[in-house]
Image 1 (cartoon, rainbow, N blue to C red):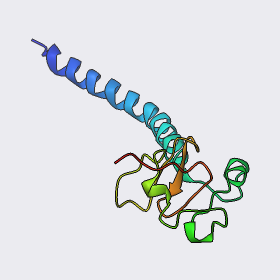
Image 2: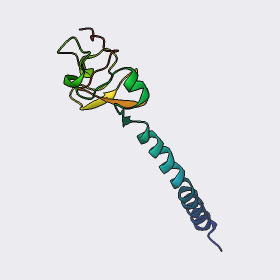
Image 3: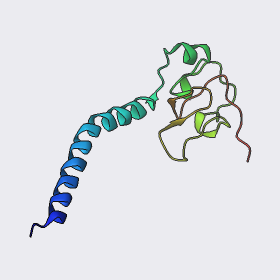
Length: 109
């Protein structure tokens, strides 16, 4: 008598392994695209230049409030204490928590 259940298990294992090997490069490509979307914005970026963004708020000549930084802006959605975080203005880019731009609006207490 032949044991067919072990043959089926072996075939299933080989199929799943082959599918995993084929899918791995696609998963890697998807993960790389997500990481690329979270790059820090450069001060020379056209939108950043138009908004007079500075990674160091102390360097922003147009800043009126000495305490104004991206970290205490209503548009900044980064976590408290992080060096960088996302901003609603610069979609898909990170801004410096110690940065500033002309769109700065005081965060509600």
